[in-house]
Image (cartoon, rainbow, N blue to C red):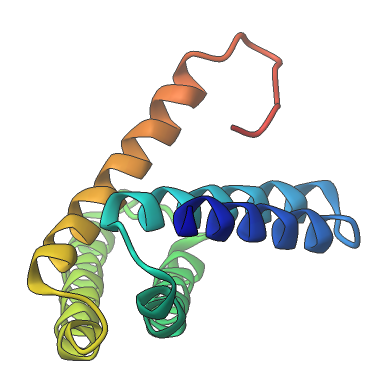
Length: 150
């Protein structure tokens, strides 16, 4: 019952946010809401855990997005295969990005373990991967020209 109520509240909040946004922002918010519902369900979070977990998780996700955005922007207009040196620089930068992302996970591990169990943290990592796979499968199964968000 609690999970159902939490899911419905999440969907209503997403719907409320979506009414004041561009179509692209609406799609992003809808995907975020689906991810919240999916992870909440997979981790079997109760209301108290969810209240403590989501602010920490959202902060981690925000830092990961900023890190990814910084890396992508660095190479947005460059061709990393233009020269052998450019390719080597890109490889080094990509490895640095991956190391920084790993450091973020390490940084937030203890903070997450204050709100969820170790078993739930393992399920979190699995559910993040499962959600990405679900999104990719949905995108691959769409007919060409169909831009509906999952």
